[in-house]
Image 1 (cartoon, rainbow, N blue to C red):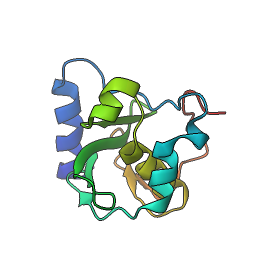
Image 2 (image 1 turned 90 degrees about the horizontal axis):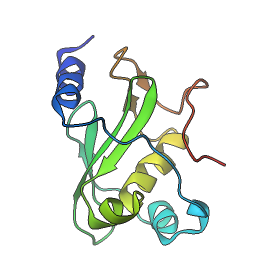
Image 3 (image 1 turned 90 degrees about the vertical axis):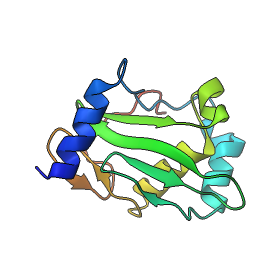
Length: 127
């Protein structure tokens, strides 16, 4: 396993509490966040093996955790939308790009990089 992956896993282990498991809210495919994720290009980039900066359109850059950890997809964003609703355009953008094989997501347990969701991954709230 690479040093960068080991460092990202260690940083998550030092956090107070576990990172959120990605769940989809009711009617997430009809949300403004989901539409924005599909319509606006992400001009951001990776920060570490587990995080990236997401910069959609003319918006502010936001730091997003989007990784597999303990066999579960973990996602968190520093924006107000995520803080209040547990869902935002920045997390939605990561999901949209990943299911279209346009984002590499690291499994911090194995060090593997997945260019799309692996067959064994289950995401909470998915319909």
